[in-house]
Length: 139
Image (cartoon, rainbow, N blue to C red):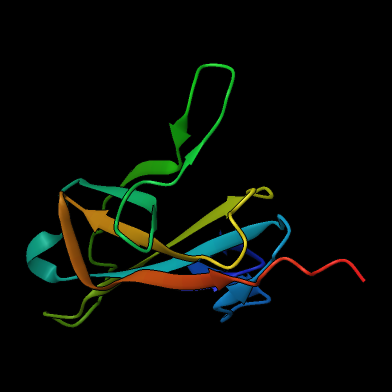
């Protein structure tokens, strides 16, 4: 997983703009989470469900007010991998995922974590933490 300003998937690859940061803000800015999942051969031709959650430093969902009440930031999807023609046996297949967000009004001077889950399980390296800068004091 990698935090970025923007990301997209094209031709089976991740295209990342402004990637690799861990400090942002303090004001809301667009952002993205770029994810590469390596699917092992024994998992080919099965549908896998993924979820991405924004949590605070204590592991609680980050909530934002909406007209329907407080809502957490959650994104979900599915993927499936199969072996391309001629791939040597046992070679994993990469699945790129790019999730872009508009400006999120995050609390300044705080720590957050994006947590990625596949088929209900957190995978090794399946989180990306970041910190928002403190609000500037008026001069």
